[in-house]
Length: 275
Image 1 (cartoon, one colour):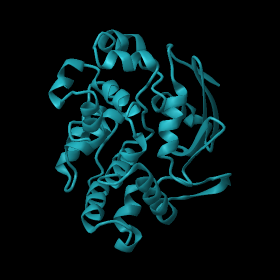
Image 2 (spheres, helix red, strand yellow; image 1 turned 180 degrees about the vertical axis):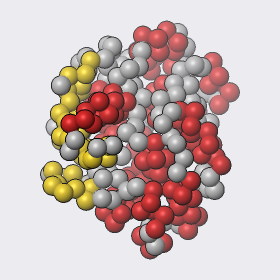
Image 3 (spheres, rainbow, N blue to C red; image 1 turned 90 degrees about the horizontal axis):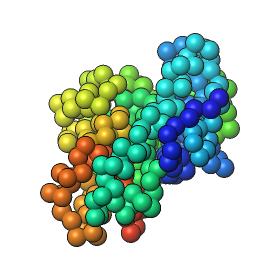
């Protein structure tokens, strides 16, 4: 199956973003193909996505064939296939600071998600730590609480833990500070609907979750105009260009893309924390 998108399209950048955050057992990247497990209404699934110049090649393994539309929607969301890169270019291309970054990587997309609970939980796990540390932590928790696949597929062995498993697990399952354990449990117990970007606003009602987490989840859920003024990497990228937080207002309504371009052009991108 092939899912087209409007060019320019930098699918390799999406793969790199997802690979840096890939949870052992749930996700892997081999030879430019991103694979992951899914929990869909009819059962489990494995999604394999290989980006091309003008879209993504998709291979689906479904427990229930009726889940194909849901799996395809996940694929489109993950790679931002419904984005309009020409509109983004019109909005940011003339900016003296963002324009050159856009010219270097005109097809950069905001990576999406397959599940609102999962991205919110991953954002909580990633608070105050590096990408690699968050990835390791998520892998340990998944190995302990994730549902094992009936038939493992290479490195894919589990589905991401469900909220009920997190609520019921003992504290020793979570190798992290007690405050973050509480925040993760409170998030799981709240069972918020996190299907649309606007839903992320309610995350700040959960103990231990602040504006950065809510904003990051909204960005990954598809809001094109999220800025993260408290993000360490964003602040550093702005300083590298002689800019301040106040400069971001002129990038609306495409501030999510501004964030992605700032992240992508840090002098030392591996040293920052993003879930």
